[in-house]
Amino acid sequence: MLSVTLGAAAVLALFIVVPGDGLLRVVLDFDRWEVYNGSAFFNMEKFRVRKYNRTLSVMNGTGELLVDLDNRYSYGVHFARSAQGNNQFNAYPMKLASKPFCDFINSYYRDYQHLFLNNTNLPFVPPEGLCPFPKGVYWAKDASVDSSVIPVVVPEGVWRATTDLTDMQTGEIVARGSMYVRLSKELA
Image 1 (tube, helix red, strand yellow):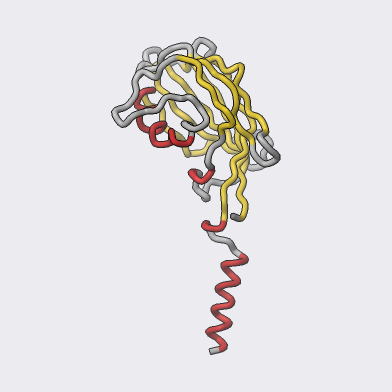
Image 2 (image 1 turned 120 degrees about the vertical axis):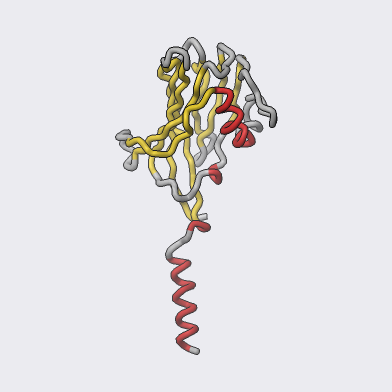
């Protein structure tokens, strides 16, 4: 009986000392947004990342889409990670593969639009889809990403998500931007 009690106590102590996935929570902290080119397509001069409080950074501001985006353009996101946070980024095999723009919006964006609809005026994508994505002025007010959608197995560090908008007729990257976030984990 004593050995069963000690064994149960050891297993319980192991779960307390070595937390499992259920005890960890992913925390995303926005750092900055950079636009490298694409002034003929986007105006992001009034779009910023700012501190909301001591622990949360949010996206705020207004961006303007200057052209309707349809399947003439492809859109994709690839990721790189700096484990030390020293801006030495290594490409990571995780990505959202480049697709024709409307296909991208009607698949990837539609699946996660619930994360953005409360804090932005981005259009709702119905089940039948949306094409073209309309030009216009879009805003974000205290927008943050619910980090519960990030798997716990994604490693900590500074992450760079680079978006590419490519003209499929010429193969030219017509717009590129990067969002930088710090991913950390804490006990829930």
